[in-house]
Length: 341
Figure: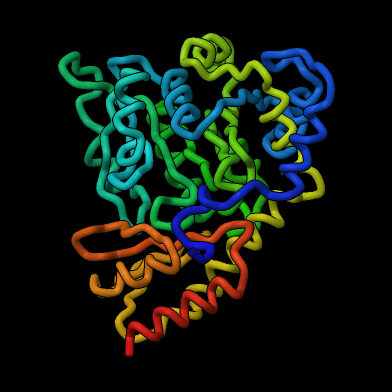
């Protein structure tokens, strides 16, 4: 099978990041985050998010989100998110089961939360019979491949802070949002008052590993206990840290993000005018969403794997990654054109 468009999770490890693992695999090193790679990677995160950032490595994205929710909430509190948010749809109820909080999934517009929907849901404050909303969780980029603009982020976070809510960003692909917006990480996180960021590595060229970046120092105080209790304290943490260290050195993160964004735009341009294809979302990150005839799916997936996002409408998600090549896009477009004849 050809290199597909199923997920940036499907891509292998970026060669420079893979090499970092080999370099880190020399001799012995202290464990549980007391090694030199963890110290150096933490400084790199501080360069991008500010000196107050405290960084905790975990194994996967679900753990990053769950441990963040544990730090942000008490069991009688709730979290606003979209109806398509990863924490609501794709984590098997882990945030609610493990963090004990309640998710309140609100109708989204192009994958985004809106102030009118938030206003309607922000009710019964102080009512002991009602779960008390504590957190606004934003996915950036959204699950539909759209990106909150800087102004949209400012408006939503200002709304939350006025109501004394904490703000979490699910940033499994945050680098793609930064590249698309042409801003630094700090500009649309720390500077806007975000409390915690779940920062993705696996979807961005790493073998494994994510980072929980705590920007609110009050929330960081006990987080090491939360991480340990959640089974997410890496003993050989140098092998996660070294990957992030390389990821940030020489702006490799931006190179990876820029490439996947360009490939998504090229994919969009190559398929948007093919008869039978309906693009449903303007691609703003490394995803193209399109409806295709159901009869095309089986034949197309024999050559190029991808996910059917909505089994009722046959809306499909086509993801690009650090290793997507122009030839992949050309071949995929050619297969679609043949099906459209």
